[in-house]
Figure 1: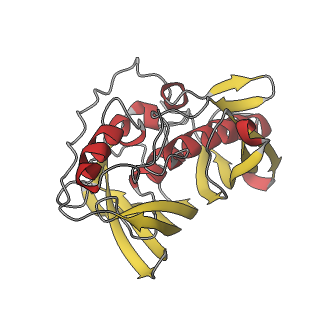
Figure 2: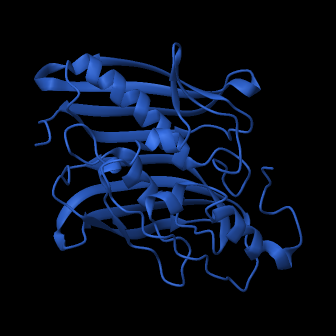
Figure 3: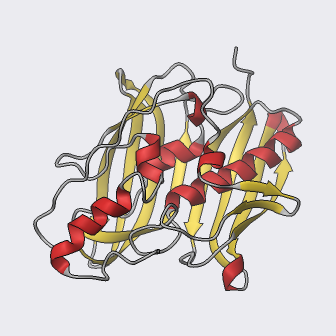
Length: 281
């Protein structure tokens, strides 16, 4: 059952968070290997082959999950939610084994916050992979006496790893890409569709259309922007997408995620810019 973490006794809050973020709960963080709510800020993520596109470059969703930008609030102090997100990739990280995320809170008010991050090669801090910006809101305060959630197990990087969209439950139907109805596997602490599945399904749809428009499966995302319009409460969730091809192998895709269980209410709207890349050798 999907529940808001704020429902229940305050003294059980951290136990509820531990359960929600464990292997039987939200898939986003533990599957991608991002440490979650440790005593120190998580700052590194190992890159696996399922985080890369057909050209061998980095995908947008893993970076967006590693640096989610919820206004500077962390789950150890609040119940946050994203509003807008921007990711700009300048290095496709084809030979990078691990990334490091350096976060900055630009400004945080009573309910709204602005944040940004730099993503670099963990082995070479001078090598910038991407920068992010975002706006988030605080839905409520967490109780005191924070207790860290256990770090996720290391996922072995093997050739038989399924694509991320398969793990997150996204499927391609005749009318578009779709996430299933909301479950604890896909739900945030505020009992709505989490940002992770949103990024994953939007990218699956965007990459498919970008490859079609570019005439090649070797496409690399460079700019990734998402507006989180309203909470996804029911599902299934359908992606509607259109796109355009430009000069020099550039492609732009625009997408909208709607909640079919709530009369097609818009959950998120995004845009992505791709370029035709080189096949991974």
